[in-house]
Length: 263
Image 1 (tube, one colour):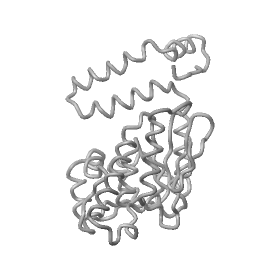
Image 2 (spheres, helix red, strand yellow):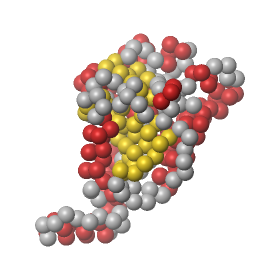
Image 3 (cartoon, one colour):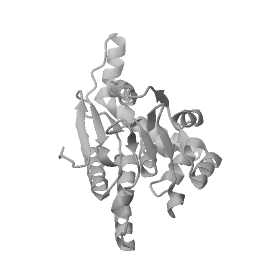
Image 4 (cartoon, rainbow, N blue to C red):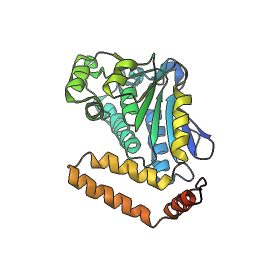
């Protein structure tokens, strides 16, 4: 794995990768370099995850997960430069959402704008109780452009998403939890540790099964029920001939922990 200027990438054991947005001096705001780094990382992991089975994404420091786009870098940008940068960001968001590996967002602090969109692009969110969230782009003369209008509405419902995006108001982690945006509320300083606990549990399961199940949920929800079920069965059938399926059944009958190899 390359050394990224804006990301800290480290393993937790053999199967879990911890990725930290690492620009704490600007509350981990997303600049062009971070966009390039994220796109490269997510693309590499999709192409060759190796022994990795789960990713945890968090932010450096205690104040912020990510403050969104770096507005100082954007100040004075030409229209052409803005569009080119945003095209890079768009590709990074899609690469994260399309990543076969499960990704948990450990939101250790505030997540605004593109920061909340980054968390929403993950599979689910663990957040510190003192974290705050907002999609406040309409205050800047733009609108959410990192799949925020899509992912927030899918998480909290159309009407709630309209209220939050159009008013641009911030909301608490407790509110996000009540609305279904946040899976677990964590004590301050515990979001990463709690997310890692779940990541290790995911990594202990059959990795091909986890990836197929993630894909089935993600794409199935974009279909009608029966079409989604057919998609589910196609994903299911790809697991029947795997070594891990044989190992899982064998281990169950032998009353021992399975040793999965991702094959």
